[in-house]
Image 1 (tube, helix red, strand yellow):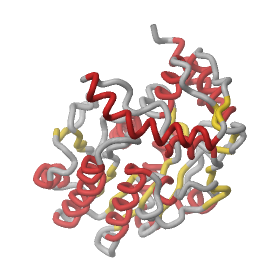
Image 2 (tube, rainbow, N blue to C red):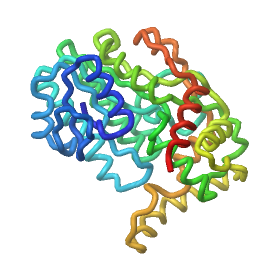
Image 3 (cartoon, rainbow, N blue to C red):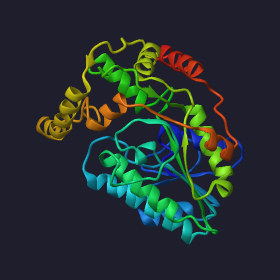
Image 4 (cartoon, rainbow, N blue to C red):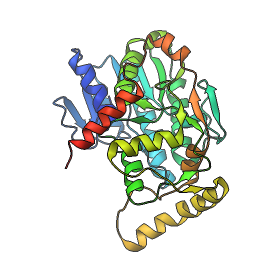
Length: 325
């Protein structure tokens, strides 16, 4: 599998190894999981061939996930990397491929209310991450065949203890006073607790032959107002929840400016700060619009249901923060 150095990838690798699977992981830096490792860039075709040789199935998680950055980086990691994975699977007779995608590949900026897994569309997806992941999903599902069963899984807003993406960024910006509520904060948003996301990907691997050729959105199935979600995460981390409200139009204008000047600011100061500006157009749309998904088809097809509800997940997150200095 690729991308085992991240929270979700490490969780899936551990789950597979714990049940007795022979797991090989590929990522740029050691994951410290005690498994066979190939240290390489996901777009390195030769290294990918080495990692995939002898494997019956592949889970592809590696991706560039920042919301801003040069398009060439997204193209190399997300698009060329996925093409390298598909090529290696075909060359080595791999039978199953689970491609980890994102609901953003089919999000054109408007609200998604009880939506299904609409077709990935690089032309309409918002921002370089979503566009590149949409193109990558098309490459992966385009390889589905009788010989190689491919399923694309779109976990929605994965979070939990140790999460460096959603949780860490929310907490960091709340501490800095840079986490306003966009609009009313009432838009309903669903999320996925890490344990449930891991379980869903393992189930996708096991049910790949049944679900092949399809894209499936995975979530807890517990949509809540975005203001409530942010407040709950902040409460678990012991930081003040956002109180300031910013009108959507004003926030969009500020986000467009911020994502334009952020790379210049970082270059001028010759430093690496947070991975992105406080606001971007993509982030504002995520905070201001509803996005939750009908989970009935996914759960029936994968024979999977979430086993950790949001309240239990928040309690585990609070316990994790309480144990840290």
